[in-house]
Amino acid sequence: MRRCSWWEEMNLRLETFISLAVESRPGYRVATRWADKTWDKLIIYMALLLGLFLLLILFFVIFTSWWRRLTRESPRNSSAYTLEELAEMRKKKVVTEAEYKKLRQKTLEEMELTRSQSPDS
Image 1 (cartoon, rainbow, N blue to C red):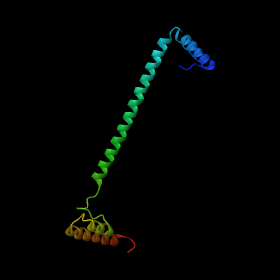
Image 2 (tube, helix red, strand yellow; image 1 turned 45 degrees about the vertical axis):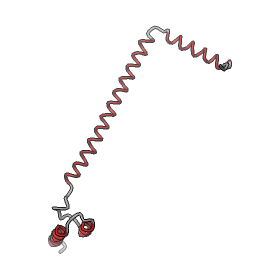
Image 3 (cartoon, one colour; image 1 turned 90 degrees about the horizontal axis):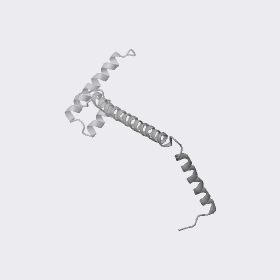
Image 4 (cartoon, helix red, strand yellow; image 1 turned 120 degrees about the horizontal axis):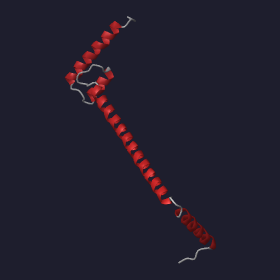
């Protein structure tokens, strides 16, 4: 066992004296128990608050993805595409050839309709 230097020995004696002096005070144990309970409650409440916050974020993420999926236009029944988007969908085989022709015709008709309704013409 290694021998302590005089400085370490004095430091150890001082720590022992202070801890004995503090612990022998009347009400020390009651006060520390109250403080421990208070910190325990605080930690529990903070954990619950963090859990609720994470649940709120999870709900928000799930709700927004569900809402986006719900409100997204389906390529099968929409003509709200540009001709470039339709050509890309055709290349990727998202739509069949017949659906592509139908959607392209709808898109061209809508483009013509918007051109004829614009005040510039």
